[in-house]
Image 1 (tube, rainbow, N blue to C red):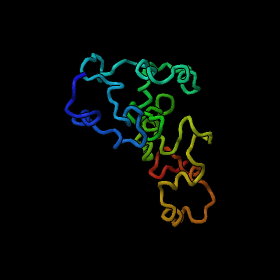
Image 2: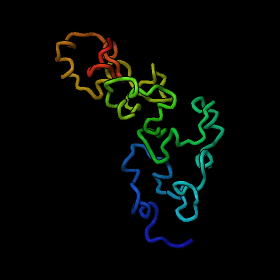
Image 3: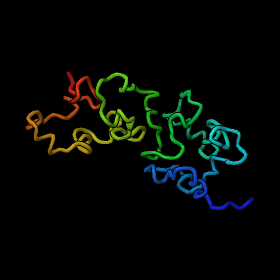
Image 4: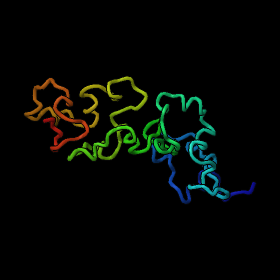
Length: 186
């Protein structure tokens, strides 16, 4: 094999982003700098210079029996793993594609006038931990602590509306958005 002017992945980074700087979790070959585990920059005739297409690329390394017998992948008509998973990285180890939740779940951006920030950005995993947690609605935390990860407790509970309340945030507010800017359930 010929010598390159730089080793992987530095050679690739001449033109492409360093995904390890973009994502919290990176795919194994990306983290190891082995771009040519999936891409062939010289001989590939496929889109994105991939070595293989559709599921064949992913199941070359990932055991297809384990993947497709998982309760999350059974009965899925998905022919390409990257429809739901980002092949380079993501916010968690399952590396969901931004907006992939809408393949199975309602897209609140199309239903509501005002949208909660994480929902508007299609960052469902800010609040939900899909396929991992056993909590109600796959929430990362239950009750107000989930909301207070991002929203300032002191500022919220100083207002007249919230002073001396024992309710959870979602008793009054729709966590996805609403027809008013405070997402008040009417």
